Image (cartoon, rainbow, N blue to C red; front, side, top):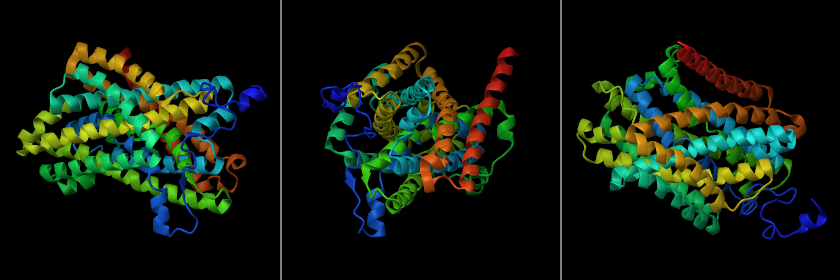
Amino acid sequence: MSANDANQNPAERPWRLPPGTPSLSEVHRSIPVPKELSFWRKMLAFSGPGYLVAVGYMDPGNWATDLAGGSAFGYTLLSVILVSNLMAILLQALCAKLGIVTGRDLAQACRDHYSKPVAILLWLLCEVAICACDLAEVIGSAIALNLLFKIPLTWGVCITALDVLVVMFLQNKGFRYIEALVVTLILTIGGCFLMEIIFSRPNVAEVFGGFAPKFEIIRNTQMLYVAIGILGATVMPHNLYLHSSIVQTRKYEQNAEGKGEAIKFATLDSTTALMFALFINAAILVVAAATFHTRGEHNVAEIQDAYKLLSPMLGVPVASALFAIALLASGQNSTLTGTLAGQIVMEGFLNIRLRPWLRRLITRLIAIVPAVICTALYGERGTANLLVLSQVILSMQLSFAVIPLVMFTSDRAKMGAFANPPWVKILAWLTAGIIVLLNVKYLFDKLLEWLG
């Protein structure tokens, strides 16, 4: 790149980013955090990015896997949700630390560290994960529109592409507006499922027992398939890239003390937000187990079936409507973070900028094509299979984001005094190892099944 190119106005040269351009440059360090603020006001100032990340942990893909797990296996897979959430808390804390200390998001760090072919491969794998996630959001939103307003699934899938306009409007207003909308929708989802738990009256002792891990999950191939789907739906690959970028929207002091404080508050923010995600994911599975599994309905994997059965089985007319409202809020919430993640990944890996609406439209079209074909050919049953499959695809991509993240945050040359201490390294590599081993075990079992 020539000196003239580097000094050229980015608006006149939209396809290539100048060297050293920060992640999400339009909102980079746009939210000031004065040093003199009290603890609680600082915590409020840093709050927001964690909730955008938490959205990805409660998207419609979670619903399909949690419903399937709850109806088929009762409360057993609650332990998978808990372990997945603990993994997510650790990994998101590492993402926040990487972004705050280095000023680089995970995609940019990968581009800096790896050769160009490896970086491009990692980018392609991440794009597959984002499209799989977007597919879940498209289908989930379309199903919710169908349940609430009787809009045909195929039309609902097409309508979801219009959320590009909402994203553009909010980005122009400011990053805090996006965060406020996301928190509002999370509270809506949480409120709806709190009522569903009250209506379904689960056995409290069995619920707590479900959080204890069981070896049966590894031995049972069908249970393992759903468990990996839950893992893929809970620990989202693109969220690792997203979080390392959006923590940089805060304007904190660029010294060791300022970065240390930013890491503390960003970790507190993401941990609190992910506890909301744990509640909602567990609530979906608990409601499915208490309503369907205990009454002998062990094959309720489709969201539509759950909607139709909830009110009659619970004897509460509003139960199905609350379920659909929460689903719509979940799908729309996820579109906001999907836009940002796509922009971050493309800019970070390729140093190429697309306008957010164009980037979102491309991703949406890639997700809409299989969704339209599947809904047209197979109807409701096909959408359920696509939802679960999309989450398994996400899980398969996790290793390619988790391993670089752990490597970079453990590297003293990159992180200095903020490099992971030994106990964090052990936990982080153990988490990465569990993810890799579960996926290898699943693929081996499926290969034997196909050969047999």
